[in-house]
Length: 337
Image (cartoon, rainbow, N blue to C red):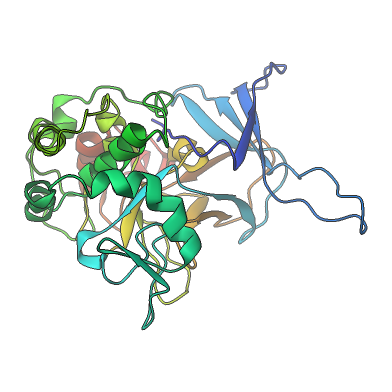
């Protein structure tokens, strides 16, 4: 099962085209990424595409495949978030927009939010002006008391849609549109490394609408709540060092363990494996880097681990089914490890 997402069109250029089907995968579409190097003072060559393609797999929907050999530790590509939000416990410690740690100085502040730069303040101004019109005390307390983070992303994206900064159908490419009962159950997983499936989406949805109604703000079409719920990543940025992604937050994580959460486009197409060959790291802010954990052959599918890979077989199976709605059949799980 894939974790699907989108990224800002200004950063990623999607080219839909048909290619000859290849063994075990048929090409869905390809992508190019920003970058490129100057050939001389006046001529710049076209951006180099990342060494990957998004294609249909035999059993897990869409996936990401290497188009050439990728060496262990190699940077596969970068990704900017479509939507992100800091953890409630980190609001005074990280930039409200890019989640960069603020340190001892704050370059810009606006209506209770702190930013690492004037640029970040300007980038967030449109949707932040909508946010500050509503009273979020009940909504934030709901998130805090239940340990939930994905509703914060829903709030942020709803304000982006209302302000005109984003389209209501921005996440339509994500799946699933509707969650199964198991994926929104109230069963708790007490380990801090495990996603906590608390509360119900209905309660959060009601609080969100109530906040908009009381502020006389026409609410957005928020059918994207379930898509955010299953595609959100936990962001860890520790002292400028790489922070491994060994668990992605589909619902929530320990409030003190992460600086925030975000939804990306291309990283969300990576399928899961309990013994992954790639992972996501963050060095300074919410911008993600996908790196190879080992050598990857051309044509091989790139996979990340959605959860804590150190858990035993039964714990992984339970969490993946309840949190993501699928039974893992990766080689490690099939071996009983």
